[in-house]
Image (cartoon, rainbow, N blue to C red):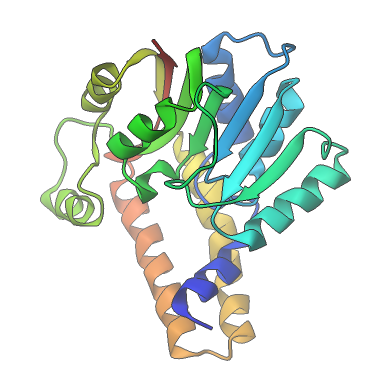
Length: 249
């Protein structure tokens, strides 16, 4: 297995591939003010195994396309949708988020939780705007500073990992500069990181190592995730995912 294949294997059976919660998905959906009983078309880009895709299906009357680069995640989503009898409204698409086959003005909502960083916030909001109907909604969560200053160590780490990290005010300005009218913002709670994402992750570390015979690559992945968890717990008051809700104008 390559390192990427190992990473997918580590995350594919998790409930979530990133921080979040059903309550926060619903909160963002409610902030749109959209008629949930309407015949909506929704794209969930970077859906992973579909934790938020399923919540959207359960709380709207929409037709939802879950998009992800990794078929292993989409298989999990397909199975969940069948189990919950949502398969008539949830379809999956194995594509990269920067190479989507959608038509202009196709969707009422473009959704993406914790995934837009793969192509960059500004690139994503520009590319995906074409797929939105005028008056449609963009709902994305994106790594965000939640204070105006922070310790040098964590600032340097994130500026190297993802230079587009910024404060919410600057992210909102990017939305305004690219044809959106921001209508809502909040950041994820610490429980969404620790209880819903990192604690379940910690429980999988040992079994993952055993499954892969304590290989060097598996050990490296475990150590990277341990460092990520430790970093968040140390600096959790300085960054989170900001959830941005905006209308295409």
